[in-house]
Length: 125
Picture (cartoon, rainbow, N blue to C red):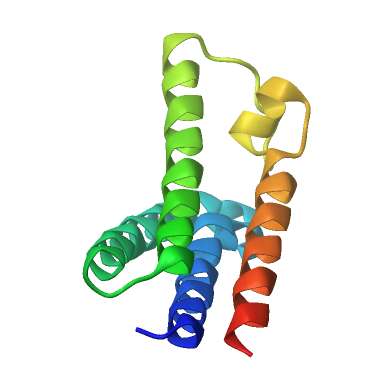
């Protein structure tokens, strides 16, 4: 796989991970949980694809995309586990992890994902 192909694949996979991870923001309030569940499964499927492709075909950019996807998933899992151990108040429509820390974690994650996609896209051109 050439460097350009690696960067294009990483860019596409990061876009899928981003949509799977942050797509619930686009849903109506009543559908957020269902959209989140769909997105979580899309993210898991994408991570499995990233792992397989990164192992056999991918270069550095695909491996970095895989690492970012795993970090996003582990941060969400850690937050959910913490909430199960000791729940905190979450207002309707407010992201659970952001409610705990009072910081818009989703926006920070989306920013990081956007930067990674931009870097991958820049390498692909």
